[in-house]
Image (cartoon, rainbow, N blue to C red):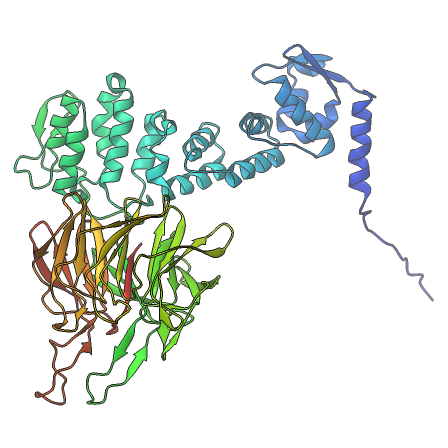
Length: 588
């Protein structure tokens, strides 16, 4: 007996949903079969209850819950703008919405109230796409007030990443106390110093002091006061205009023999235990990355040199080293700078070949990415980041000592040659400080160490000649803080590798010697964090080769040391994983 097998097809029409919504929109535009009229600001919006209920949980509840509105043909709605509702109802019937900066937040608030999640997502993404340090606080406060969790999370991350700039605006001073406590207490704030958190806290308190004075203790307890230096504390106290706040802050100055706290009753009382965390925030500037360079085998008379692609990071608080993914191209005497929280390596030399190759490192992803190459191969260049741009300065350019300066625009992703130095040189030290680029020392066109010091203003493109170094030097480091420059170590043909350190007063235009390093270093990586100078590796003739006591030559180092200007003293640090010379260090 045979059975007949039934054949069937179950599928969907690709254009059905589109045609259906188009037909619904047509019926709506022609006011056909409309069974309800919404009245907003005296403006009437004919609609269909079933369409509104399908699109919005708010309307579904209104029409199905037995409320009085269920029986009415005309329903008046309050707390919303007819202009904004017009955009919303158009979306309900067409699936299309126009969002701009003037209507986005009002439309988002309405969509959130009505439960139209598609519009919530569209408006949230529009705000995130257009977020900036100037508006991120307002977006965060808006998202918090309307409990839009994803938008709040995204704006909070942006605010934390741009904390210093974001808290300078008026939006921050208008936040509610709970939001201020959340932000100031965040572990993820990107800051250079905890003093920046204290400054933001004071800005909020002082904006409305009569009302907010009673919150001072709560706000202050979000600041890790023990991480603020004595000098920074006093600078903040001196700048404060309210006598009561000044007196209270003075009680928290580190190393104060009588640390006290202002109780809510306004009485000063000694405390045994206060929220005085000593550990820096997760994203506080506390890491130093030492990248590239070369190593020289110091255990053989005829030394071999290896150019390095290695990356290691020093945690200034744990005093521990950690290695990371190496560069795509090994290099020494290269430039290194931080742009948009990524480390950029440019130029340098490997096996006597000078490079124009540029790559950047994302520490969060532990990944190197190529960037547009410079216009010229450069060795012994200076690389600085300033106002969102990179500047590659001088160096041995191609086959000659260069004078050119290249500027990298991250928006157009191009390098442009923008200016020239007054004097050609390479292996000089370069640092950016308060909007100026400072150059010191280096090798001149005669291949001799020079003592020239200059500053360059990239905005006006003006050069200024400054007081000369006390000692001509090249292959040295240059760092800046608190109105001073420090020229560290280097090489001089008469003295070899140098241990000397010079301090330049920008105000007085003078150089003075400070306590020298414990060992001479040329080509060391030098960085400054929280007012202290960190020096890594380099080469030194102070270390004898193992094969003979009668011959002394420069060998590469794995040692490191730190200088504290407050006490004019150096101390040793844990050794690096790799010995390296003509390396570069940056802080992130």
